[in-house]
Length: 99
Image (cartoon, rainbow, N blue to C red; front, top):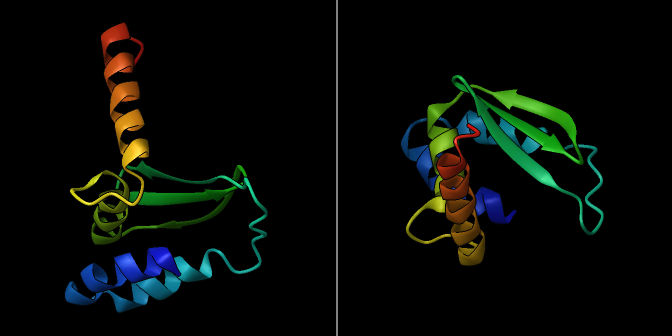
């Protein structure tokens, strides 16, 4: 629900309200036990969603991808410490030459 609240304005403004429904549907039947990892990756123009290491969906929407990553990496991240860790990890990866 929290993700939906943050994603809805951008998707509705772009005329992609149906994308929000498709995003939500990816999680139907998923078990969100404490500690379950939800991972979002970007492959080309497709946003891939995994829950507990299992692919649960893939959506092609640049607006969705941008809005989702903005939630975590934008000006007002939901988890500032996670944004910092992401930046540090990215910098270390680039500095190591292992990219």
